[in-house]
Amino acid sequence: MKMITRIMLPMFACLAFHAIAENQASPKKGSEEIPIWAVGAAMPSEETLKYPDGHLSIMVSRASFKPGEYSFLHDPTIVEYKNGLFAAWYNCPKAEMQETSVIRGSRSQDGGKTWSAPEMIASDKDNKGIMYVPVALINHKDKLYAFVTNMKGGVDLVHDCEIFLLDEEAKQWKSQGFLGSPFLPNTPPRKMPDGNFIMAGRVASEAGKMPKIPAVAISDGDNLTGKWKIVKLLPGGLLPGGEEPDCPETTLVIDEKEMTAFVRGQYSKKLDDNSRPFVFKSTDNGQTWSEPVKGNLPMGAAKIYAGKLSTGQRYILYNLPSKPRRNIIVLTVSKPGETQFIKAWKLCDGINAELKAKPEYAYPSALESNGKLYVVYSAMKRNCIMSVIPIDSLGAKE
Image 1 (cartoon, rainbow, N blue to C red):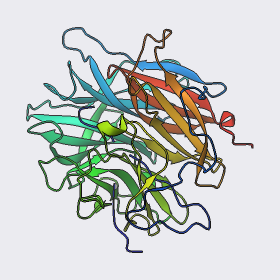
Image 2: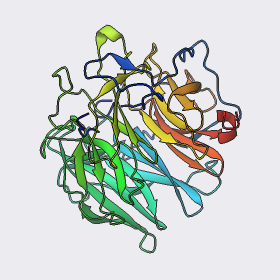
Image 3: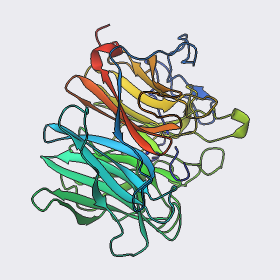
Image 4: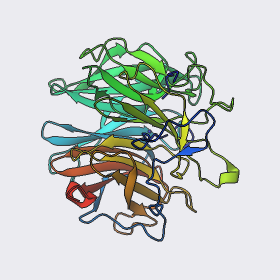
């Protein structure tokens, strides 16, 4: 089969993939769906979804409506750093991508129970008209890097992706240069079997345009501050039907011999916020990708996030199609070593009186550490919430 390349809402809202079941032939171009959700298993629904055992929800950062503060927050990410947690997101003074957009973050040294006051990571301090959004974090060799998209001239008009490094002694984030492409990251960099790092996201056809093409960025080994190779999952920029992707936010699952990319599906009023993710796969460490097919798991119009647990289980986080939209974030897992998702739980649902939060809940990102899965997401596009889930509650021992 010919291989192709492909890639966290007014600006980001997009993504997903699932590998073909064992002994099942790869679907041909134009086929309807492949089973990323196990055939015969009941689909996740509002009526059947429950919270995982031991699940906790914690407020990481809350919007401030004071003068000079930020009342808009969206698209958070999380990483382990110096025996603690570091979460980051993008902030705007009042509304999404209005006036200015900055990247801020907070730290926790007690497993997320309490968080420091937000610190600035990237801002337009020289008044160049740059909006910084979104951010992807990685802790590499005990150094904390932030990959931040630069936009200029209007909402979603991407120019490049800037790399920042935290200088702990100076207590500031310092720019290390640029990726060299109008790339927007949706997931943190992850190491591949060949030793290079890969970061899923989307890219513009040229600087100053909207990032409408799903893509991955690939490093040159451990050189995270050098130029990254951009591989488009859709080299021609169009889906098999000839249409342009709406918001192709992309996420990855990395296995030893193949890689699966899940890309946010197309939005359609006819589907009533009920789309299907596009699925791609690569067997050469992200250099080439299969043509897209649709997964059979219905998802709401929002960013999705996937990964692999230490138990060998795949997982994917997404919004359940619902009214109101973005009311429920779902966590699904596969059995260890398998590719089809088969079990599901909800992480949020409606009003959270304890945290004084309510939908929209969206744009999750996750980190596994110390036997727990930490999932951060935005609420109302005002607050950052974290769900903490014991790995043992996700069927790892079954």
